[in-house]
Length: 76
Image 1 (spheres, rainbow, N blue to C red):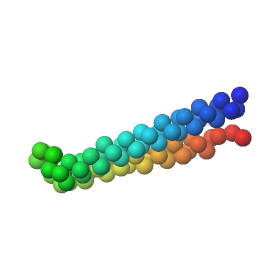
Image 2: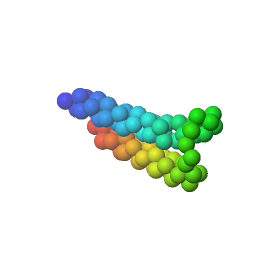
Image 3: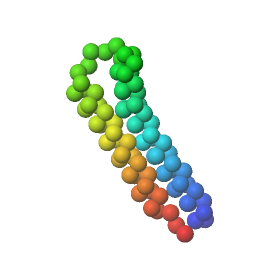
Image 4: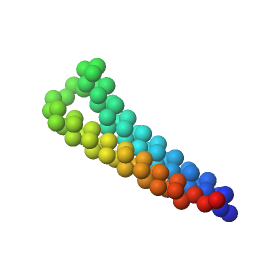
């Protein structure tokens, strides 16, 4: 039964890591690309982008660290 539990643990860790990648893409890469290509069309201040990017980056790192912690629960 431990093989099934390990696979479920890996699946959960992968889902968390994919969520962290999505946070990084949505929160950091997309706004930077929008500003770079002039597609933003908004009058947001620089600090708003920085604050939002920082929050999304924190969420991405937190999810990634949780995924690593989940993988620590694998059984041999």
